[in-house]
Every structure is written in structure tokens, then in C-alpha cells.
Image (cartoon, rainbow, N blue to C red; front, side):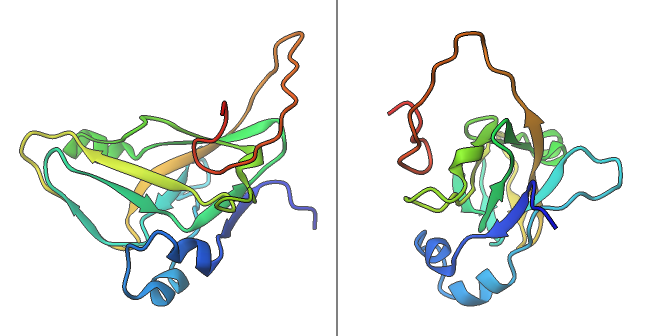
Length: 163
């Protein structure tokens, strides 16, 4: 079977590199890869591998434990889970995450996807359990402009384009 697009766990070493956990191996073994909830869902639910609590005004970077592969003319867009936004005014710190096709397997972090969550509410505390859906991701095609000459190669991980 030819692989076109999908998800894989990052290595245990890459996941452990974030230093957030005491029981890294056990948490790593329980990572849930993104999946669609219903047959007509556009988005793949993205699950937190760790439990956390966010007070109003707090934020946390969540190591998701997966990397995503896709054709060169696609990207994976990560957006907030609508329920968290509506109920708690929770959002991604960068509002929308764009995972480029060449992020997969890069030499710095192997394409490890992260979600920086921010609680923008004025008075609500958010409790997330391990395995709760915290975001969703959608595969999309993109187009290139006439005369596009981008020819450099990715050399880093998160936030490395344009450097």
C-alpha cells in the first residue's frame, strides 16, 4: 500500500526531550494519533497526551507526540477545537498552526507537532485529561503563484522557515 498522508508517533527520545513528564515511556505508549470522529468530519481530532489545568490567562505548550506526512502540495492546518473556544475561550497561541509537508522528518525535531494552548477567559479554569481532544487538523492543498522560485530546503524544526 502506498502511503499518501497520515500520522506517526515521533520517537520516544524526541517526545521525552520536552521534559514535561516523569513517566515519559508510559505516556508515550498511550499517545493517540489524530483521527476523525465521524465519516463526514473534515477535521482530525488531536488529543492531549498529558493532563493539564489552565487558569484564566495561562498557557501551556503541549507536546502532541505525533508527526504528519503528506504530499508536497499539501499542508496540515491545526485549529482550535470549537467546543473549547465556545465554552472557555481557549485558543491556540498562534491561532492557526500550519504544518508544511517538509516539516516531517526534519533534522531538529523530526516533525514533532506541538499545540500551545491559551486560556483567554476572565474567570474559568480548564481541566484537560490525558486523551481529551484539544484541537483539530485538516489536510489542505495549496497553489503556487506564477514565477514562484522558492528553492531553499528546511534546515530546522518548529518556526524555522524564513530564517
